[in-house]
Image (cartoon, rainbow, N blue to C red):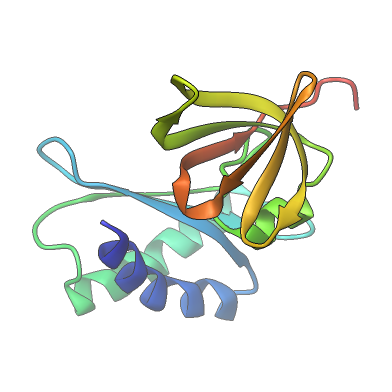
Length: 153
């Protein structure tokens, strides 16, 4: 799966950046009858429905030419939103002070899901404050992570 994401990223990132957006991340879900490629784009002034449609057309055309995803697939383009997924260590660094939900690839202390405050990054590990306990999770051990929306702003 990671190889597929890497191949897709090499095609998609330059296109998205050339259109003036940041590629926040992508999810490729190959389960079911038809694979789903979800692309998250970011821009300091926000993302409109038209922005998503424009990126979808450009990326869809490029992926069809490159034929990286065999057969039919569904392509979705959107803003990462308030509960944005976290894909990179750099994104964790930008989100210090936010609450996040983290799902690990393998259980740690009998569980895979943790929710707490992102405290920092140290030596390739994400530091998460869960209640009165600090956890350091190696970035590679994290399967998925997402910001928990703030409603006090």
